[in-house]
Image (cartoon, rainbow, N blue to C red; front, side):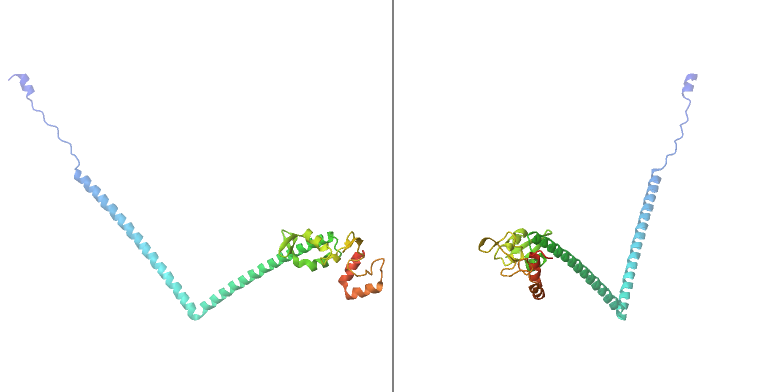
Length: 236
């Protein structure tokens, strides 16, 4: 045989195959990990359930203790005493609050009355009232305070204080004698001036009718009238 043919026929040894990891082993490992994870989850769930159960038992125990304490207090009478004391304390506080509110309201009303009085007397004085404080006492039932200012109510109708005082000064109102007679005409006599603030009453303090005896008698019997006549005569 020729040499070339012999070289061609020389056998070649095959390459040994490399080992490959079995896929079944990998799957087994994954399954083992999955099983372990499920086991851990189950343990955590059981642990949470145990804690919740323990908390529930503790709450039941606390409620039982409270119930037992309340029952013991009730049996010994202490619970009733404590309840009565608490109720009395609440009642005392309510009474104190009511008293304080009444005091504040009284102060507010007192201030409102004084404000009304001061405003009305100032208006009466400006209108020529001989004794503004006395006249105020006579008409105060008709006066009210509105937004800090005095107003009058006549027959349920609100009347401005200026208009009300002007009506008091008119002849026939029954109050006209409480105002100075200066520049005022007598009833039914045009242009005539009244000599006194009281119709038909001689003024013992006037220069024309000065009479000490009548003054002393009037001061003793009717001091309000005497004060009016003295004011009309310009005597303090």
